[in-house]
Length: 324
Length: 262
Image (cartoon, rainbow over all chains, first blue to last red; front, side, top):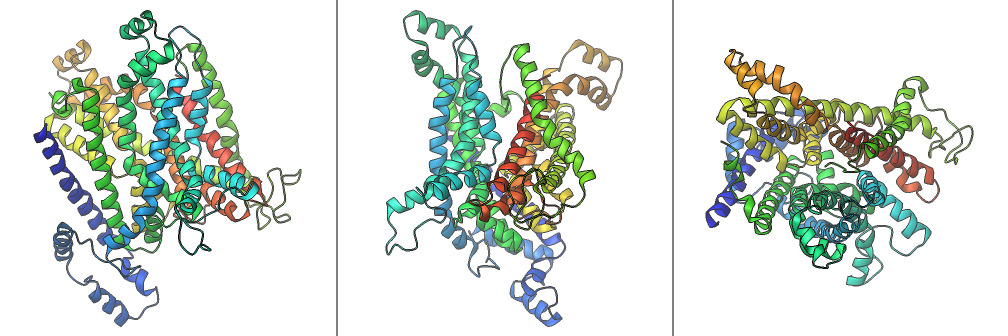
């Protein structure tokens, strides 16, 4: 077990080096590099040279790559062209807003999605409940930003219950927690609606495979009502696929916040990566990509460990099991 | 993700008809945009009327024509991305299944690494590097989705291992690539093609997101671009917000339901 975790943890830096190297090569081989972005299209040759020298862009590619790799290994991802600050510092400043969006949305979607999944599972032989899954399918297809705009239209503009955008009320002298929560209700809801649909559909499919099992017959024969038997016995067995889907989407959840952060003008990672991409701030784009990948890899590892707890039969070395 | 809207043939047929009904309007719009040409100009922010069935935007452009252009962008980019993911994932999945241990390891590790980069992030990175052309957007979205297809193809091909007809093909002296293409591919094609719905809706949603935050070609405004444009006018022009989203849901849900049917 310890060996397995260590081996998997070791794979994270290796994966990051591969992703980072590929991205580095792409960035530096792409036409119209950062110099044009910084100096404008009509800059003089001297200005271009000065900028190249300042950011070390006049060195040979191999040397730049090794320099970047060495610095990255020491936790230095370079400086952002746009914000004129270390990349990790810029990311650190934007991370809290994204986390306060993504984490509550994940928790809510797991809770509500599970409830819908449980509620829409019917006993074997009974009529199938199709309304729940159909609504969930539509919920999953709705773009988060469209939902977000709809929520703004209803709850902020028409009813006036909640603020339209931002993270704090600028009129307040000191930011209050209550005010912060009020600002986060709509963006969190928009993100959660998208994810809970996925949770509900996956759980319902997994539960559908469990309801016909002998242990469910036994549970009902000894007098448990169907919903109770579902919660007490089938739920734990049906959870691994749900967790696998959630765990596999941790990285995507961070990126999925892009559009919601745009609608609500929140100072998060998603808007940061978009502005960095639009301004060709390559160190920042690369830094954010590496951070999201690291989070995604650690999330996958955590999911595998939790799933192993729930379902020890699966075995940790699944690769070796079906490689032969 | 399979929607599991029903297991009985009747439910499946129902889902298929529903899917077709949902898909037809956006598809018809996409085709109609070839004939509609440039948007006609009317009064600014006019609500839906006979002259402008879906209203006009803040510049007075007819929403119906704008939405038809958006439909074309969505279907072309979504379709291209889906085709690329199917082709790339299918080819690599077959390589993994029939290319020996080393090829299997290489393809599976590559899939693992690709999966850690969310497709949307990959598209953002590529767009920031190479520019925002529609072909590039489609390529980035398709490339991000290949591991799903690759894994399914590989698993399905592994399932056929040791089948008598494959063993006799081998005994007859057929080469592995020929067996993979002529005898395995047709057998697993239905399983692989059942991913079409997920791939297409994923690509269309991702394209809309990119176009919403302004990372696609402004000369070809997609539905996402129209929704972003609706933001400042939410209170005054609900039609600018409502219709792009409705069409997008109809297109993605329609394809997803149709893909469940066979």
